[in-house]
Image (tube, rainbow, N blue to C red):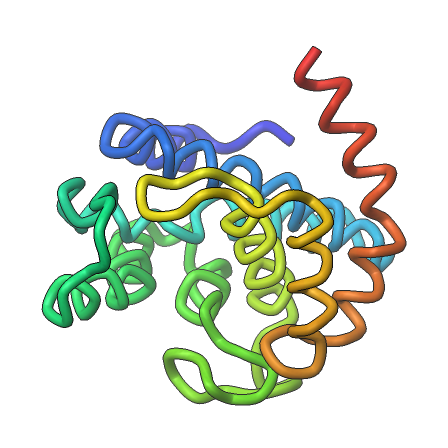
Length: 193
């Protein structure tokens, strides 16, 4: 999917601020797209969810890189800043009229199926696109190396998704993820070569 110039400019801003966050956002966009396609969604809906995945962490451009890339545990004050990145993202997107459709996906990508997320939304009250992005976001974060954590191997990431089904994640989406994962991995390995 090609992105609009405004989206490309936001992604470039994110890339310049944090290459790690930019790469993660690209991965989340790809995984979210595959999940939306796996649900049989219309192409325009897939495009919205893909764009939401690509820009889900755009608010992190307002988080200092010393916090984003800190190798040690964040202090409570630093965690509060980090926790606000969905709000920062919505504020950034609100300045661009064409992105209002993805604002809820960015705002609620840290909600949990059991209601223990940032805002306390639960189950089907969480927009479907945000539930898709939450799963893609968590899986990529689990299986990618970051300054503050070693990546889990693929099997550990899969186990964590299975354990989180019905708690952190929409159980239907976890089941779908397991169904489509072989095709996604095959597609991603072709892109890498």
